[in-house]
Amino acid sequence: MTALQEVAPREPAGVRREALYFAVRNGKLMSGFALVLVLLLLGLLGPVLLDGAPNDYGPRPMSPPSGEHWLGTTTFGQDIFLQFVYGLRSTFAVGVIGGGIAAAIGMVVGFVAGYRGGAVDEVLSMLTNVILVIPTLAVLLIANAYLGIRSVAVQGLFIGLTQWPWAARAIRAQTFSLRTREFVDLARMSGAGTWKIITREVAPNMSSYLFMTFILLFGGAVLIASSLDFIGLGPTEGVSLGLMLQNANQWSALQLGLWWWFVPPGAGITAIVGALYVANVGLDEVFNPKLRET
Image (cartoon, rainbow, N blue to C red):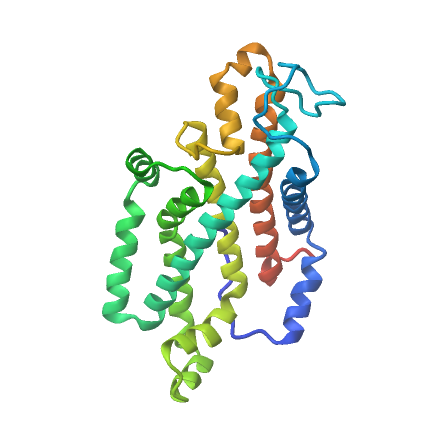
């Protein structure tokens, strides 16, 4: 994770307006989010506006990009652009599901461990460390072998359940530093319960940090899902960018010179993950005054 500033007490409206001022002027943030937004809209609207199913065979196999087939066709005549837009939808879906589940678990564990401390912190930290050292890919391979991954939702669930430990440790550290602040002490003396203090006092002061954490988890989920799809352990139904790469490799697209089969999905995965990380760097510059570009 990128270096972040120490979380400060709840920001006044003027500080938030200042952050927005720098956000719209940060080239990394705007370009990263713009690229992600374009790909997201393409994945959402493409399948609705385009006719046909992505795996339907066509009469023109191995055709290069043209006006009729914007990204060419596969060895079976399947339209690669149609597969690409469907693959974008699946890629964003697994990122949201996997990143969202990991973020939710990481926040709960991190907030509780950091705020409560003591025996609760020790138990949750031990659990986090145990899961942290477990090889994630191996666990996912075993889970797929015994349970099978038949949908994007199940794949996202498996990824989310294995990707939360580092986020929990980071959130715990920030919460630990916030729990001794005066505004938290005042809330505690007023009789507020643990969850009320966490949700109303601690979490709002970490909103930027939590958002950046979700971005990193989202990108990680996309990379893991693409890796599983490429080695043939992803969903058996539908289309994804990783599955497109797997099919291109299986049917010797590189040897046949069908660059238009494997370049688009590879570029799509790189663009999504790269844009998210660039945007994350931009967010760090916006929220950390020491990194802001004047």
